[in-house]
Length: 426
Image (cartoon, rainbow, N blue to C red; front, top):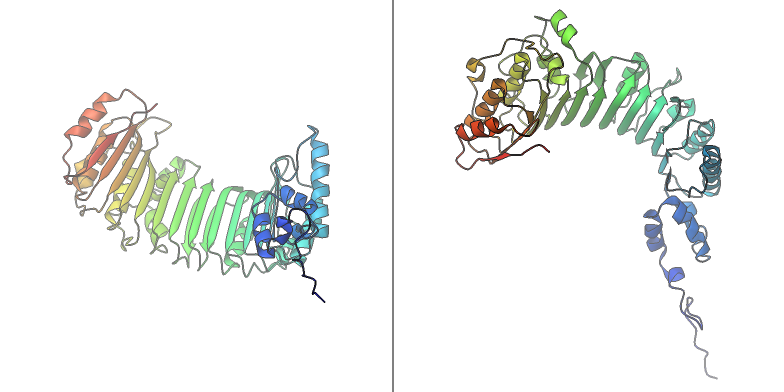
């Protein structure tokens, strides 16, 4: 007898079901690039796709996770709660990442229940962003989750239980608009031995930043604080600090005290990129400012400074950093006008620019200048001591500063190929 030919599994008298024939890893890749709402909707495609979404390792609940058919915030909130409950109930695989960031969601007690469920599933990344209402108190169960590798909180209040012993596997911590006590902050940082990235933005409850993190490599902070110190941070290479507090009164009180500049750099021998934003240069200028740091910043290749050119101590501090950075290649200077519009310290003369070694600057950008003598002296100094300079971009604070452009063209340049770009303000 003639043997009947076996048909392929995905073949029929009709057009082949190509979606069902896709390999499992290809389906997983497709689902991983879809918003959660669209991933769940693929369950209607075929039986093979029906529960595929339930094994997604990354669960993101944001404004895209459901369509907004109503303007009633209560309806939106209730629908979102039902969606999260439904997804977590049916989810069958490992949960690597859980992110809750919906513009219409305030802190609700359901978050405690979801957090407990996630800690039992050994979640690795936990992101909670509360965009409305009061700061949400993080449930104590989250502080027992030793599987966490990344923790990101927005508009939250952290009060760990007394039994909290840190996150032993945490590598990245991002806290924005948070409240926590001084001892809680210090204990949190020092009890995360694997911490590599730390972001702090707009916090309250503590004013002294004592950073003890032996594996820290990236540190980004912006907020109001009184003091900052580093300990065991010899791996730190990328630092961005913005101090949103004018230290004028403290500077007068602490005049003649030990140098903030020296204290700041003693535990940062390998800093590679440094951003000094808002009033932090004023903080560094408190106390005695040396000509050079005792230990040069050998690895520093990028430096961004926000500086008040009416303050000679800030200028001296900036010059100290330049003298102490022999391999600096890129410099950005943002002029910060003084609110009181008066000279805080007598203007320093040409002697301030002496004893400076040849710099390796290649790209310089200076923004917000108005053509004052301190600004012009600083620009002239950079041109005179940068023999390998390729480009300097100067942008005035406002348009119509024609005298500034004329002065720039007169300056001597140590580099024969240095290009000066005058960028008009809008």
